[in-house]
Image 1 (cartoon, helix red, strand yellow):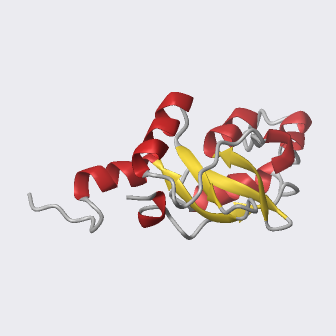
Image 2 (cartoon, rainbow, N blue to C red; image 1 turned 90 degrees about the vertical axis):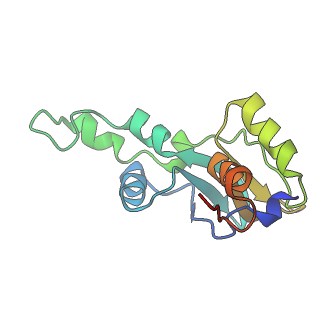
Length: 141
């Protein structure tokens, strides 16, 4: 089986110019933990909710908030994203993708075509669901 059979084809992307404040709001609304960074229709990075949390001040929005805490919200995606990305293509075998996740201690893989255009994303949850439920996501228990 290939990753194209189980990957998420709907991908939420952001631009490198979006701010930390915008990312914080996006992650507050969604159930996933990674956003792919796209510029000129090409994958240029990835940013996680953990990246956002690492750059937010614990004082943001509190009485102890300082000007420097508010200034952090102006950081851009480009400032905090990872641009050292491991990608796969849709024809990658699920087992090979699983090995890439494990050996690189990452939790998702952007799926791109030969031109580095985003076609999907594969997470460890997609792989686990496949192994537990199979392709049809049903299990008789």
